[in-house]
Length: 473
Ligand code: FRU
Image (cartoon, rainbow, N blue to C red; front, top):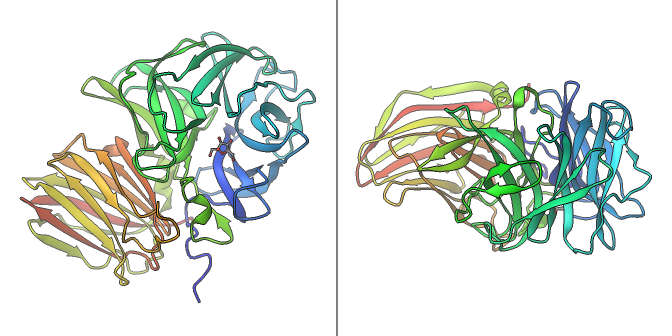
């Protein structure tokens, strides 16, 4: 019989037991990255939402800790964020870890709790809730310190818009502005916002990015992460390109993305829930459900006058690399097979390659296993697109929404770099140093261990090709 844990990832975070959705309250403090998460401790489907908790010193090795915040009379504990209150603005104590979350009962209202022992125990604020409304979908507070105005800012999802509030003590909040009308995609509810200032590569400039998760209404159905680039003065966010839709990831399984607060060296590290509400409760795992994406460092790049998000695999992931197999440069004019990616393939590896196109119209490869299951990766140089086809990837029948081809626009078609992170039940593709990203779940009945390249309409060279076994040390 099949190992019921066969799909549990090696190097992606999963709950030890039970259900997980959104990453919550991510904050760095005293040498630890905290990860809280939407958690059902009693079963592996959504319900009874608590904040689960884990800590890491390096973003890859995680230690599970007990549930941090549990339901109370105001309701269950929905998504939110944490800040470190260095200057004791709230009066809970200097350096208190302050959590903001949605209490989901009859209504959705915002609450807070604080910890004086680095998140090991939380004390709920006695005068919760701190923010109420009559709007039905009113949730997922993200709080951060805005230095120029010397105020705390909260961004909150309200139906299909974001609301921005400010505060000087984390307890009293005043509404400053609303954002969303006529902006971006509106195929579903807006959830899990974030608002961060990022550097534009190759310049001294910075711009603000508003991260907006939307469900449904993603480019391939269901959940996805869109974003807006612009300016923020502490009160109001102005989108600089209201007529352009921007997606942070072009796969089907990248949702509820938010960033770590208080990370060192100005880093903005993002983490997504690697699933989609279309089928999250139905994926073929048992003991637990859902993993997070690998952590990604965010920055901005410009292309044809527009400014876009770049998501680079966090450098800590290099620590996972073990045994490597490097191939010499090869040319593909019809087909080229790599018969064995790895000798001892447990399904957790990274493939890093550089492709130099000569005159091909299609550059493609299949990753496959001995069961005939495969994932097809295609660069279409005519349509200028990159796509991943998982329709034949393994178990797909648990939802009619699962078999899919996902496509990203290709902005560079001369020399392409690609890093593929494969881990038991997921594949994350980072193209051109993270200028496009595609995250998709897969459920193969054994690891893919072969790769077959092909060319149409011309030829190309694979000038570097390395497979790394990935694992925790
Ligand atoms: C997003 C979301 C949030 C909410 C949480 C509930 O996936 O719907 O808006 O706070 O999940 O678990």
